[in-house]
Length: 266
Image (cartoon, rainbow, N blue to C red; front, side, top):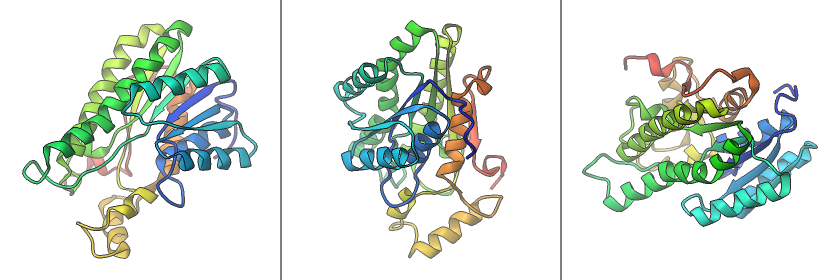
């Protein structure tokens, strides 16, 4: 990504900024992309080492970042992170919510505890981060919220993920609600809907659907009209745009980053 300073002078708070393995997940790439455009980044992850790895990657490029451990299902943790960000930088301009988990199975196979966990991590977490950050954005009459949803929240993608699909559909509605409530206060909220992506996360989901990694990669590539999966940087580039002033009149949208998969009938 070309460095243009589109986010110079701003602070980006990225929840889910770590990566579950080698490479660039959506959150880690977004944190780095924000930093490359001039933002100071607070990279938050449930796993402390993952947050620090993102901080190190950003600092290695000569940009400003701090890695922080927190559990997004805990409002106390989130408030602590927000307080730290404000103490360190004095402002929060971009709130990026990337945390999400999946669960395999339809209504019959999915346990109540699994359903509740998916809803808590994928939806309640965004409610909690917005609850903590919005008062500060409102006080400054500016801010951009970027929530990561999923194509599975609006259409069938070939996988039985009923809890995941329901949670991501809720993310869309939640984002629109925030966008409209705060539109006149200088705050925008938008949602990115990735399709099939090639990130470290998918390699932990091989069992249950595929025999091996090669079969999974080939099958997922075929799902996209482009013949290939996207990656974390495709999501990151979209996030930078939505967080920047170039998107100042874009609010409450669901931006598909899926190679056109949303428009297919099959």
